[in-house]
Amino acid sequence: MAERAVAPVSHTPLSTAEVAQLRSVTPGADNIIHLNHAGASLPTQATLDAQIHHLQHEAMTGGYEAANDAAERSEAVYSSLGSLIGATHSELARLEHATAAWNAGFWSVPMKAGQRIITANAAYGANAVGFLRAVERRGVIIDVVGDDEHGQVDVAELANRVDEDVALIALTHVPTNGGLVNPAAAVGTVANAAGVPYLLDACQSVGQLHIDVDEIGCDLLSGTGRKYLRGPRGTGFLYASERIIDRLIPDHPDHHGADWTTPSKYVLQPTAQRFESWEFSHAGWLGLGNAVDEAVEIGTRRIEATVYERADS
Image (cartoon, rainbow, N blue to C red; front, side, top):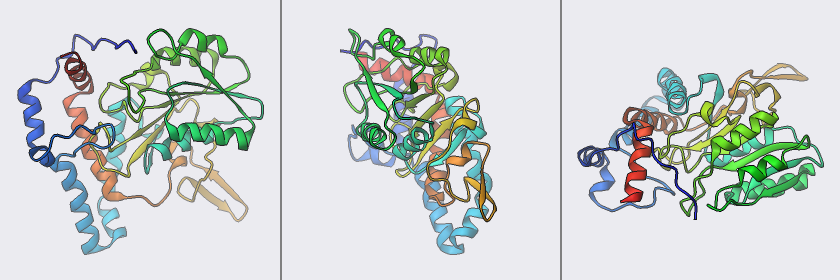
């Protein structure tokens, strides 16, 4: 069984009154006991309103016109996400969901036949399929590191496996079930020392644990809106560090992620925008922005402290 990290003692868990207040602005909490946060959480009324208001505006003015009117609020979502995980606007890309974000990052990393991708036993199913497809498509080797005595990825063994033939270290921070929390920052230390790109799937951790990309040391991080952030379905994001962005080539760029400069040439955007497509759900993106703002206002360290307190009670 995995050893749980201890929540930072300097951060106070939410009080019973604070939790009650948050439940009071979550309409679904009045009717059901919802335990499926690992699937999709109940949104607050404000997050719901952000989506509905934009959809109504689209219906009354047109989709393009409504998007123009919401441009400033849409841009602000990047700043909100940056505050959430410690990233800059230029390092963030909007995607349709966590798997789309993970795939965008994964397939952008240069890989050659015979190179290895190091991963752990606890991998999300969609990611595992991606690994197998990379074996077929690029001829890479998937190197699965075993667990330590706590069930977490064995960091010492991982460090021993790192060599010049490693194209990527890909880790799932928190698997879909089981309560495991992998030592993401320790893996980051190994990856950074070796100069190996590091992709972290934070789909199940962002929103319930404090995430700081600099502390973790990841080059790429994928996340979703619908789980512990309590945002809309169909929303996700990718963090791509500016220290590695020039090495990352999106698998399916379009005329938003790249400039079509001549009939026979295109130039990728210099930022994480290279991973984005022009079309997306503006209502969902605005809803995500509200949900992220709420998490930031509460404080992710306080949220994490509350999670650990309840797990230990």
